[in-house]
Length: 396
Image 1 (cartoon, one colour):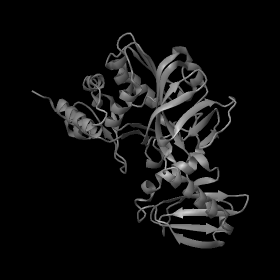
Image 2 (cartoon, helix red, strand yellow):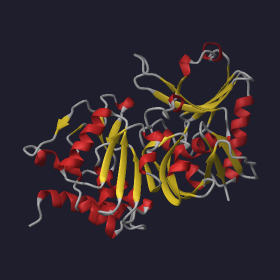
Image 3 (cartoon, rainbow, N blue to C red):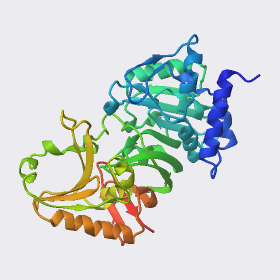
Image 4 (cartoon, one colour):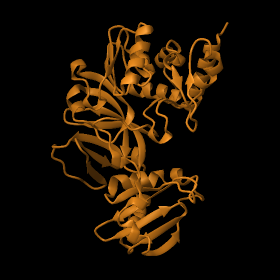
């Protein structure tokens, strides 16, 4: 007879099959999932939007089993929803990512962000007894719990290491596969050295104000190149490679705002294909993603909650500091301050975006090179230099 755990496991697997019906979850990944129950890797959790932590043990497992196998991420570490430090990811997406990564027996795999250890354990099943998985976790408490879980389950080919994942792990390399389970703005230079040629890297790339995109990259002799991409949302990686500027700029803290707010020169309706505040982030993800690649003056802004403003508000726009010009896309309107230079440039980019087919970052081909590699741009190609690498975004 089916146990209660098996019941919820199978329900979740059916859901994954329904969501990814065009790219069915592979039999190998299904087997890894069914033999590596998710609930064994969650000792405590809380849900988004709540402050209540749930401790999990054998006595109360049945009470929480539905939530543990719900198709949603759970918070493992962090009391503030705006500063979540570790999660266990949405399970159907985890299975999809594993299939994208194409982990094979005998592979050596590097994971950045161990979290609960569940993903590492799934990959440990996929690489088999002769393969190895090294999973790096920067938060000591999380690393300790994940390592204890792996040891309790006697998973001998998975090693949880407390370390900054951005540094990689040269001692275990070179790697056939690598996966980021937190978002990264940059590709650390270590990965050019620690990945085997033709190896696959699955990385969540964060663009300033432009959302997250999951890219599957193949290692070539001089660079990585994209094979596949899809939209996603992940917490940012911590440590040396964390980038504070990925967070929206507090508009009211901008030194120039005290003058600019009194220099409003015009407001025009602009609906982005919809209406209202709630759908604004989703309606604009394509143009924000595009602007984050092609326009250096693009910014994401916020206005913090006050007694009069009941919730934090998010906008985006162009801030041309040299010309003292600002344009804000605020829900259903464009508002210009100072002069029209920024608005004119935004409208030019919108026309360009439409002519190109309204691409988001996932519609671009991406190549990532070391920062010192000589490059020249071509038509419909943008070179974006980051801290340790340069991203070549192309529309073929």
